[in-house]
Length: 201
Ligand SMILES: [Fe+2]
Ligand SMILES: [Fe+2]
Image (cartoon, rainbow, N blue to C red; front, side, top):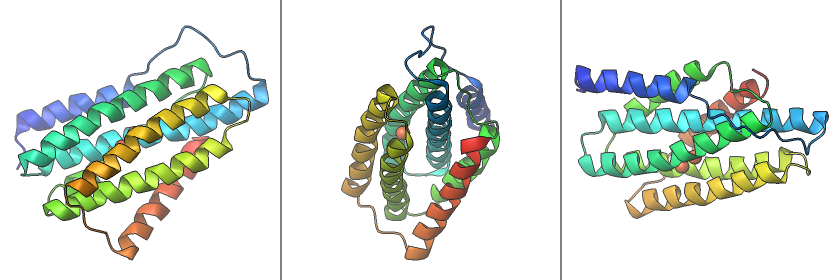
């Protein structure tokens, strides 16, 4: 059972992820208004995805009893935080905003992660493997949604994908087992709903 100190630390961490924004002093003037609006929406979804990644992995790291898992997850979390910062900065350049529901997404993802942390090691890694696989597909899909003029955002997504593939392979190397078809579908359907909402809100 996590102690109070660790829980308070997690609350502090969550507030930082949800509310801290990286501001950029250079505004992107290359895109016309229509393209900019489209990019804002696409990049808001990607930003929300990284908020969820933080929450999932922090939750998992909090409840797992296996310190080797904690170490690996916390390393991944550092890279996911870097993604979050890159997307936050890009949103600022595009004069966009983050999802108004990030607190809700964080809380629900954290609870899911905390549950996964209680599963056995291979299942826990299986969840990471599946999450990162779905994130890879998502990045390809949302890269195509970006307007052709927004080369910079596209490059950011490509850069992020390299890390996500690495995370997926780390989970496999650690002995991940394949999740059931119904679990995979549930994960995919849930993330699709959250993405649809975050695109607008
Ligand atoms: Fe990420
Ligand atoms: Fe990742």
